[in-house]
Image (tube, rainbow, N blue to C red; front, side):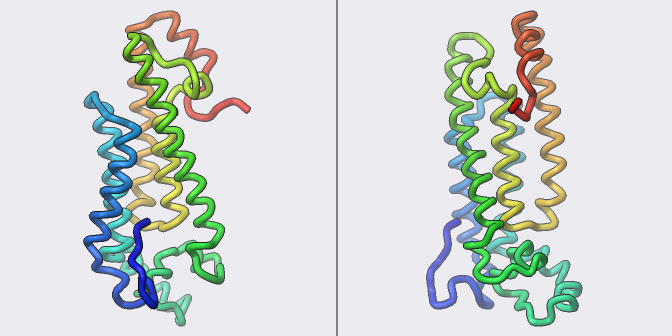
Length: 217
């Protein structure tokens, strides 16, 4: 994420209320995903819109107002009396809850987060390339990553959101995540129904041999 630099770099009372960073980071991650996903249909825009809402909710708490920290402040102050709640590092709740030492930006949770984020954006990129050429040929996508799973773009969005949960969990995004996963699953089912009506038996054969979200080892 984009961060300002200084002697304490977001580790003091000025860690929040930085709405310019909220707008900047939200725009970067939304436009980055847009460049890969390129929504065209109403279903595409619903998918992209829910992802965008998750991103805005995340950065609004990361740099704007720490709603989760505020809601849990009583419990956190009791359990961790030495914790500076207004320190930006305190927002990395996994480090606090697991008692991890050192700068959380270099901790295990951040490394896992970066791996999930990278994997998610990579899936979006390679999936869009295959889908684009399939649509131009008036066919359904069944090559490349689509030969391994039927909905790589939805999986990509889920990986990105999961990556952010490893990095900066909030009450709102934790609640939103399973709802969005269910939404993507339903969108995938709707998409398959439409493709089956359009392409018939060849698409049914594709359904029979290709996993929906998790590839076969």
